Image 1 (cartoon, helix red, strand yellow):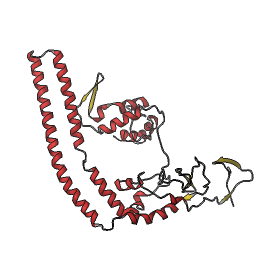
Image 2 (cartoon, rainbow, N blue to C red):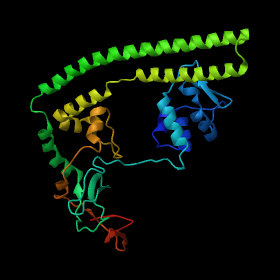
Image 3 (cartoon, one colour):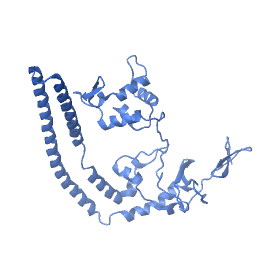
Image 4 (cartoon, rainbow, N blue to C red):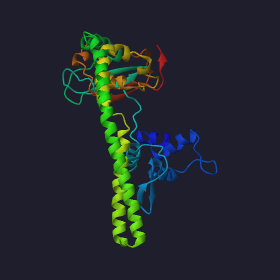
Length: 326
């Protein structure tokens, strides 16, 4: 299951997944690394999502699935993509694609300098802005805005919670009725297949008709089972998301500064849960004035006597292979 989940992220190729799964203990019969082609076969096998492929025909199996159908289909899309390399992103800044330059309205680019994130205009359009802004400076201007979007009366949150309970009760009744209806349809399909089999043995139906009706009934049952599986998922996600947004508005700064939403030393976000995802989502609006007050990164080292120059954004930046304490 972990193999499918890792590959479904799109951050792994089959070769890198082979190495990762070897570290986690996956071995072949001789105790060595599982081959790349064998791993590809495993990722393409519908057996792990509860189906069986026999002579290029996929049917519902009796085994318990270890992954969902959605994950399996996502893995198949990634396996069939034309890109040979994984779409891997090493760094993911907090304010990526969320700020624009006040002059040219271009997206602010974020880079790391001496352990800190700095944003600057990418100058894809004509622009005279050359200053860089540090992430902490942006946060200082952002935090006061959290209080402005917070509900004035926190009883609204309690009211939403009570409303969710009522909606959940209603939805639970509807889902139960729908589940019972699907179960009855599955039972009818099973009886139809049994009756068809008896008629085939008695010679009432010929082989061609038997094959056609049997195949149609199997497809119908597979669709019913898939619908039944979908009902097992939480159908109140929309309402819970609404509650999470309002709770986020009341506790935005506390959530933002919580340990679960911090960055590790590789600048990878480690936030978990719906509220942190909403806070980091592209829908978070931030004013373009944040780029007005900026701070340029400064190098506390002097370069060597013969530095080489790197042309970037039309500027000449002195670089040096060896940094000498100044």
